[in-house]
Image (cartoon, rainbow, N blue to C red; front, side, top):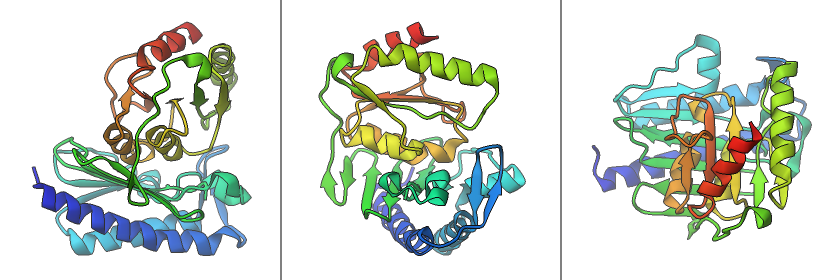
Length: 283
């Protein structure tokens, strides 16, 4: 396991990569986009690809022995293996649909995790299946979320914490519709939302898993769940940031969170049990 000074170096490099990718996102936001479809509603643009290339090249220069997993690389080549080697997990633009439509109210940027406009740059590093560093950058409103394991979570350099909300009825819930449009999936999704809406104050869909997790971390949101998101790149950095902000991340069934399971729930610790009960009742 790397020492804390190495984690700081990882974070500094990730922030630099995120800022560089953010420039590409800002420059492309108001221009005509060339859109490809990975699925019926799952989109990719030339900006996604350009950001991922920039990030990977920048990180490889600094850490040539590290491994890399990116959303667009995986979409093209199916590379998703998570090993015990230091691995950067990158979502170059989380919220591509928001980016394509110019939906400025929920733009995030790029996310990086070492081991996302609404476009998030998610960058995370994984070390020995341990997530020590996470960065989520929103270049449109210039919000940078960062976290190092054991050192807290920050928004633009200022410490953040999850909310102290303790009742579902006064809590703000976030979720996403996902990319599947078959009738059975849509019915299950809308039925679940209908059930939960009777128990919380209101619901939001931002269009970005990473943004929702950061919303939990800084107390803008109290509850979040999503089923069937794209892959580890959607959640990795946000998980680090939530946990370092005092929150909890878990499977919606109540079991431990599994980064490869495409299921996530997050909240402050006070709401976890009640939220899990509500989720079970919504099935």
